[in-house]
Image 1 (tube, one colour):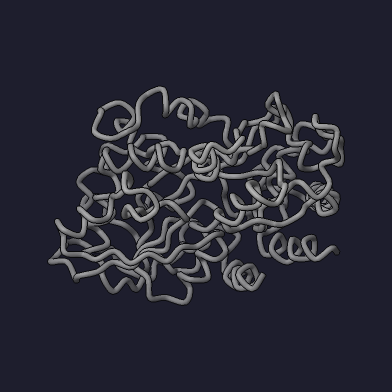
Image 2 (image 1 turned 180 degrees about the horizontal axis):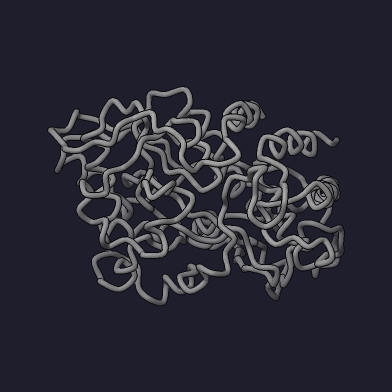
Amino acid sequence: MMRTVLGSCVATLLSSALVGQAVSAEMVMELGDGEGEVNIVAWPGYIERGETDQNFDWVTKFEEATGCMVKIKTANTSDEMVALMNEGGFDLVTASGDASLRLIAGERVQPVNVDLVPSWGTVDDRLKDAPWHTVDGVHFGVPYMWGPNVLMYNTEVFPEPPTSWNVVFEEMTLPDGESNKGRVQAYDGPIHVADAANYLMTHRPELGIANPYELNADQYKEALDLLRTQRTLVSRYWHDAFIQMDDFSNEGVVASGSWPFQVNILKSQDKPIASVIPEEGATGWADTTMLHADAANPNCAYMWMEHSLASNLQSDLSVWFGAVPSVPAACTDGRGMQNAAGCTTNGLDDFEKIKFWTTPVSSCSSQDECVPYYRWVSDYIGVIGGR
């Protein structure tokens, strides 16, 4: 829980409007020789060197080619990423949209000179100017991967895919005749409030929620009440992908919001696991590699950002994590393991349907005033604590 508390301290730095804010670090204008290492905060499974599966290694050749040794610090939530970047000592972070704007507002990251990233032109046009990493026309990162938050389920309990997120939000008897109570999980991060709001958009349309990240006081209260109901069902709030996989394998968990990463690994182990995007749609993530304002190794960092857009890396990571590449050619150019059908399966055509993580702020576009993120943080701690 300390991870979330630390994140709340950083969250308060987010101003109600980011436009026109001062930039603390000057943009790098030219590159020199590599410094010998690059330190990266990353989601689990995002930076592989063949230790989990020897077929997936996009670090070793980079180190051999550049002399930049890659050091990885795994973070399980966006709040943990923000806290680590606030502490310093890292060059890069693979930040989701609910962290990236906080990092920009907190002046923890610096503008990225896309002219120094030769493969920038290969990036999906839908991502180049995305609002979660671009402020006033200034880019603060390089797109990495994107995808939906899926509903992972046990196929022995659900012979047919569940059609609604209600299996994790409301008490019910599941198809195997047993209650879902104590057999479902929820994400251990305040951004999960948006999943509740997304559910309410379909099932409580009278609330008038237009954006699950922009909630007025009444809408926010209803989302918290739904989460309190969920609290009575949840066996564990997950943040560690590998612990969640163990819970599905050995602890009787049968349904939860999850990432394609866990789904793919469990299926590769012949576990009775599948995933679906239910009728209410899903939240999702579009992750950006961002450069710390005080990066000690900017040359190696820029080399890594360029490497991160290589179509073979993008292709293999897409297969490994079950994500969609930020470089569309990685789906079809045959340089890696992915193909067009695989990208379609991972959600390539669903971009407009995904409600991408972003940081809630009080000054919002869909209504007069919204509940800001620092409230999400403190109140979600209360929900998990049974309040």
